[in-house]
Structures are given as C-alpha cells and as structure tokens.
Image 1 (cartoon, rainbow, N blue to C red):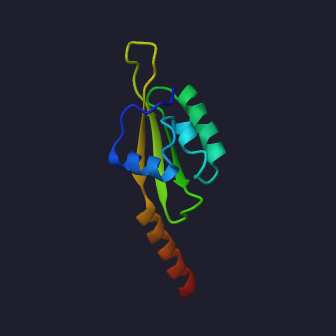
Image 2 (cartoon, one colour):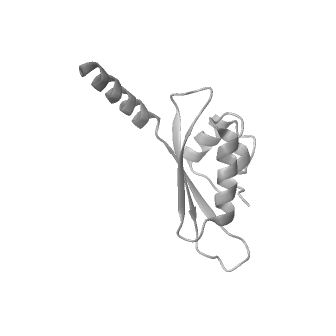
Amino acid sequence: DGVKLYSNRSFGSFAARCGGKSKRLSELVLDRVVNGEALAKTAEKNLATLGVGGVWSTEVTFKDAPGIAYQLSLSSLPDSGNDKRYYVVWARDISSEKQREKFQRDILSTTT
C-alpha cells in the first residue's frame, strides 16, 4: 500500500527534504517536489500495476532547492506467499552528478 517499512540513510535524507510528513511515498512527494502531484499519481499507478521484476525510475527535484536531485527507483519483489505485495524504493542523491553535467554544458556552450 506504499507505506515505508524500512529505509536507508539516502531515503531518510530524501524524506527529510520532502518534509517527512508521511510514510506513504505518494503523499511524501506532494508539497516540495517539482510536479509533485503528477509524481504522486505515477507512483500510485506503479504501486498498483508494476509486475514482479519490473522497475520504474524517475528523477526528483525540489521547488525550494533546484540544485538538489534524487533518483528514485521502484522495484517489485517476488510474491512473499501472503496477500501483500512488497516493493523496494531506491533513493540515490544525484545532486553532484547533475551539477557536473550543468558545468560541462556551460563550458561547452562557451567554447563553440
């Protein structure tokens, strides 16, 4: 149902950046994330339809901190033998990568 059971440090940082008001992924991204409502709807859809072995991945940026970016990946786990479905959400801070890419684009645009 999209409720977080366990998390690593990176997901904790992501949740704190989002405001940390909810344990549900789709509610967590609503307020501070760019295009939060669309991301929440897409996350809910993928929680309902993603098959075993399927992966959904997206990049998340923030309204109040445009230099901060995370990559979220959602993976469906094999059937656990009960009626619940389990997923793994990987959160990875990609801010430094995005800053490096921007720097490279800026350098290239001034050298042509």
